[in-house]
Amino acid sequence: MAQPASRLCAFLLGLCLVPLLAACVHSAPFAAPSADQRLERLAAGDGDPAHALAGVALVVMQGDTVIYAGAAGRAHIEPGADRPMTPETKVRVASISKMALALMTQEQADAGTIDLDNDVSDYLGWPLRNPAAPDAVITMRHLLAHTSTLRDPEEYWAPLGDDIRSLILVEDAPFSATHPVPGDWYEYTNLNFGVAATALEAATGTRFDQLASRYFAAHDLDIGYNWSGVSLAARAEGGTLYRREDGTWIAQTDDTPALNASAPVFINTNNLDLAAYTPGTNGTLFSPQGGVRASAHDLARLVRELKQPHNRSLWSDPWRYDAAQPNGVTSEGGPKAYDFTTAYGLAVHLLEGDHPGAAWPGETLIGHAGEAYGLLSGAWVSTDRDLSFAYVITGISDASEPPRGQRTKAFSVYEEALIDLARDIAAAR
Image: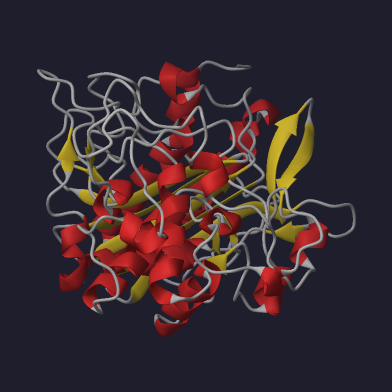
C-alpha cells in the first residue's frame, strides 16, 4: 500500500474539513455539510490515487424518511461520457442478492407454495443428497443458512441450455466429505442459492428473474436480477463496476453495452434465447447469489423488510459460531474478535452489538454485505429502532485494500468509514 492503513483509517474519521473535490455529491437538504465532505475525501483517497475509489454512495433512513442521501465519485468512467455516482445509481450489489432471495422465499412460504423444512428434492424432481450422507434430507432452510453441505465448485453457474444437475450430479460432486450432515456446519457457499432459485422456479412454475421482479414491483422497487425488470431509463443511468490496475480503471461488469441493452445480462451464455428456457432447470442462470442491480436508496428500503413480523424468522434463530466446539467457518476462518460472520440466519447476517468486534457497539444490525468485481456493499437495519442504511463502494483494487484475511477489523476501512458516518448522522437526529 502506498500509505499505511493507520493513516487511511485516521482520515476516514472525517474530523477535519477540506475543500470539496471535483466529485458530484447529492444530499438531502437537511444533511450536515461535513457528511458530504467525508464522502468526498473517501472517494478521493485523501488525495492519494492509490486509495481512490471510482464511486461511493450512502443512504440513511429513519422509518420511511431519508435523513441522509449522499454520493461522490463517478458511476461510469468514459472520455466525454462520465456520469456521477448518486444515491439512485443502480449497480450490481453482489451478495445482498442472497437476502433478497430469502425475502422472496419467505413470501412463497407464507403463501404455502414452498415449505422451508421440506425435502428440496421434492421441488427439484431429482435427489439432492450428500453422497457421504445419502439418507440426510437437505431443505430450503439448509440452503439459505449455508448449512446444506454443498460447496462451491470452480464455477457455480451453468449457461443457458445446461441443467443445474450438470454442476451437482457429477462424479466429483461438490459436497463436503468432512461435514456431511445438513444443519451441522456453516460454510458460505454460493451454489446454495442457485439450487434455491431452481427450487423456487419448480415450485411456482415461474422463471426466477420474473418471480423476483413481481416481488420487487409489489414493494415499489425498480430493481432486478441481471437487470431483468429494471426500467430502461434507470438501467441507462446505471453504474459500472471497476478495478484499478496500473492507474487505469478497468470495467469488470455492466459497461456501456450492458447498460444500453434491454435484455437481461448473463454470465458465459451465447445466443441467448430465454424463450427456450424451462423454469426449474437452471436458476443459476440469473445470478441469484449476486446479480441484483439496485441503488443505495433501494437497498436501504429493501432491508427494512426484515423487520416485518412475517420475516422475523429469517434472523430470529440464527446459527452462531461456537469457538469451544467449532461448528462452521467464519469470515476469517477462525475465532477472532473481528470476524465478520459469527451469527447468520437465513441469508441474513447479524452484527450483534455486544460482540467484541461489533460494527455498531450496543446496537444489533441485520442485513447483508456484498463483495465482487471491485464492489463493496452493505444493507443494514437496526433490530432496536426503525433505522436503516445502505452503501455501495466501487473501484476497490488489490493495492488499495488488504484481503479480508489480513484485516484487523471485520469490515474494510472503507466500510468502517461509512458505518461510522451513518452512526454520526443517526446520532445527530
